[in-house]
Structure formats: structure tokens, C-alpha cells
Image 1 (cartoon, helix red, strand yellow):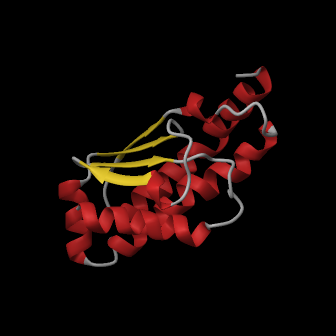
Image 2: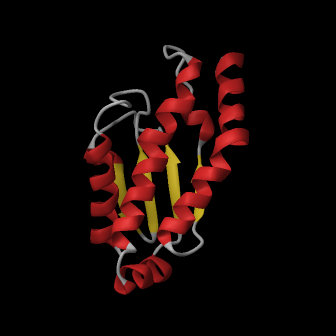
Length: 137
């Protein structure tokens, strides 16, 4: 990973991640561990300046939206508290679309290629989070 990409990721973690983490927890209605594999986002072919734009739209905003939908009822809030152990965010499989979202053994995983269609498909990603939670909890 280039120094520009490392610096951009560090800046995102330092300046933005805590805000999104807080919003996710608030939307979920319960504390939830979030594990991010930051180094998996390295993409030398992408402008390092895009991290601030792409990461929220691909990962964090869909989580907030999905949790708001599920936690809109007492049943959903309780299911999150009882069934969700953690969230894993990464780019290991280099895939995108609905197949990048899964829920198994209490872990919601988003394994998404962050710079493909990052400025499109917002609704699809939010629906994929909601579906994974709904089917898994």
C-alpha cells in the first residue's frame, strides 16, 4: 500500500470512523463491536482521496440504514441485542453487490470491493444489510 493510501486511511480512521461507529450503534439500539480490516481497502489504482467518499457510502451508511429498519420495532431491537455479536467490514473477496453481505453465527459481514459503483447502488447496499440482518437474526 502506498504512503498516500496509508495516510488517507489513517486520516479516515482518525477523523471519521468514530462518528460512523457511534451512528451505527445508535441505529442498532445496542453496542456492537465493529471490526474493520483497513489494509484490505488498499487499491493503488484508485485515488486515495476517494476513501472519505467511498467508505461511508459503501459500508457505514448502509449499516445505519439497515439497522434503523430492523430496530424500528421492539422485536427487531431485541433480535439485534440477542443475535448480533459483531460486524466485520473488509475487502477480501474483491466482490460487490448483494453477495458481499452475509450473516452467520452472529456476525454480519460486508466483504465489498469499495471502489466499484461506490457512488451508485446506495439503495441496494442498504437493502442488502437489512436482508442479511432480517434473515440472520
